[in-house]
Length: 397
Image (tube, rainbow, N blue to C red; front, side):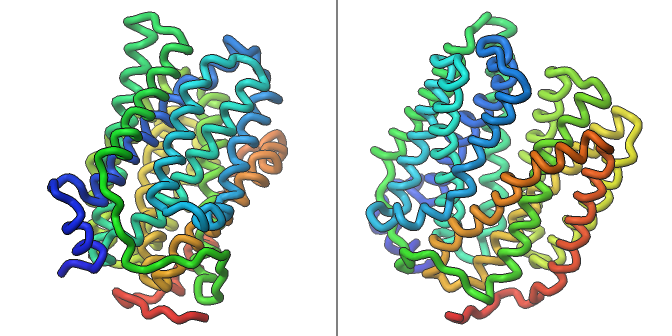
């Protein structure tokens, strides 16, 4: 059965590809090729052309996370812009920030382009979550999010391949490569602007910040997810380099392996979550993460560490379950506001953990990963309070 949103969309769209799913899929490709290109070249670029030390790269990464922490402000932008328009503007900012990165190889130039890129990235991610939960039926959300995750992985793989070709075969400059990825993203975004209709929403969204008691478990699991993710993003990769001497090529190969696996498995994971429910999916994720983090703390083999890294990344696909859980408990009018609030909650840890756990790392790096296992244990216990009902009624409390 069509939802009101889908019915209205079919009336507005004259072509079969003019659908919300295609819009979000193309937008995800834009996000993937721009951000993956930015990340793939960043460390070499800042060292070779801007003479960064650990202090400058640490400051740059902290500045990059600030827009994520401020994602709740998206609700105020929605007072004057529709979510679809806001998503397109965010993708433009992301693309322009990436395109300009290579043209300003100085400390403050890189700080400025990073903040611009990050504003677009984090606002898009916030609005993307909101649009997905509003445009997709509850029965199909997990499967479609899995398909979009697969598309993002394919786009990232293409990006990594182009980076390798650019530097290995064509002797391209950083400036040329950053311009290429940024302008490619901008062109795709402009195509979305002029080729896609404005898709209607079935429920008007609240334009104020909303915290509801019934969303407390979701907020808590979102915060814990952000804490665990920081340990993976900041310290798991660092362990591979510092302890096992992985080269840039080795790390890039791990990235590509992760994306190949996600390309094939993410859609299947989405279908599986829809079949077994959020509590079982999150129980498996958190149990697996406990073992992975303990493994990081004890591992002495570079090959075993690589396996742990790949398995760790695979569990990211399980995050679909947290989104579909919120979709089922939320008042449909709360989704846009709550997406920004939850994204900010997720990034609280990004402000605290890298610096504080960096000090712990100097004393004993195993303690960092034991803490990650502790976060996973707390999440596992909390996830058992999720209802096993397929759909959850919402209240306005």
